[in-house]
Image (cartoon, rainbow, N blue to C red; front, top):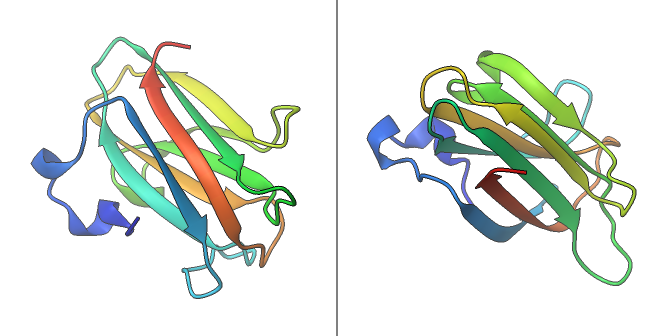
Length: 126
């Protein structure tokens, strides 16, 4: 998955639901605290609840998932939610889509420098 938020026009971004698998690699961009990240822009209908989850893949996960949700394009938008633990080793957060239709999820790790595979799901409803 490329960091599609910066490269895509708003009309080209996907509507929900979105599911997939990806990985954080050592050559991905880093947040100021040292965590690698991937961003995905998406559209959601105003007035709905949006749920996002991220789970590590593999028998011995190398990744402690952390995700952040923003209204708007990229990490410069309004931060709506974040999560670093669901009890099963994953991360999940929900928000009420009160703004326009463009949102961004940032998939990252809790600890700096971690890399590894993960699956994700972005859907309307809980």
